[in-house]
Length: 188
Image (cartoon, rainbow, N blue to C red; front, side, top):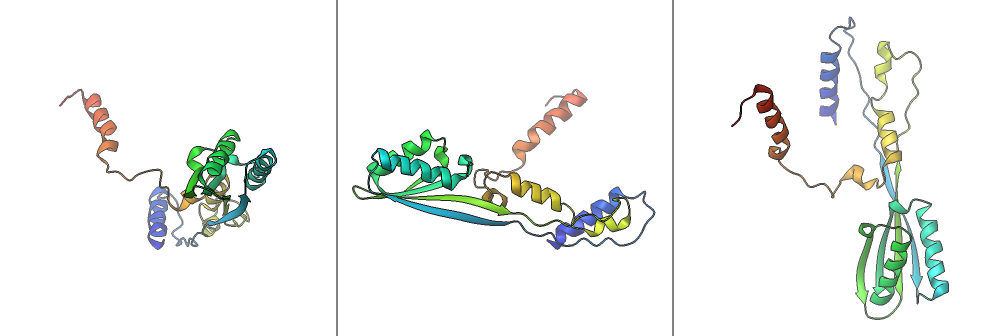
C-alpha cells in the first residue's frame, strides 16, 4: 500500500514539475471497500403452482430488483432443483449465477439466494479551491473508489475476478509490434 502511495507521489512530482511549491505532499491511506454478502434461504417440498409463485416472490425480494446481481446455490432433490433452475432462468437470472450442490434423488430443495453489497468509503468534502496545496491532503481517488463500489454488478470482482485469467504480455505486445513495423514501413 505504501509503495503505491510513493509511486503516486513520484508521478505527481514529475507531472507537476512546473509548480513552484516544494512542500512535501502527504497522502492519507485509502479507506477499503467493504464487501458483505446478504443471504436468504427458501426450502420447498414441491413445485406446485403455489410453490412456484412462492419461489418467484422469494427471488424478487432477494434480488431487490437486481436479478443480474443475484447468486443462487440450489441443493436437494435433482427434479425439484431442475424446476427451480428453470423458474429462475425464466425470471432472467443468468445461468452462471446458478450453482447446483448436493443433488439427491428425492426430498426437498433448498435455495440460497446471495446478493453481495459493497460498502464504499466515506469521502471527505473538499473545503475550498482545488488549486491550492491543501487539496492534496485528502485521500486521492476516494470518489472514484466510491463510484466504482456503487456501480459494480458483483462486488466480489473488486477483490478477485476469477473470470479473467492471468496471461503473459506476448499477446498484448502484438499490436504494438505491428504498429511499429507499419509506421517504419519494415516487415519481418
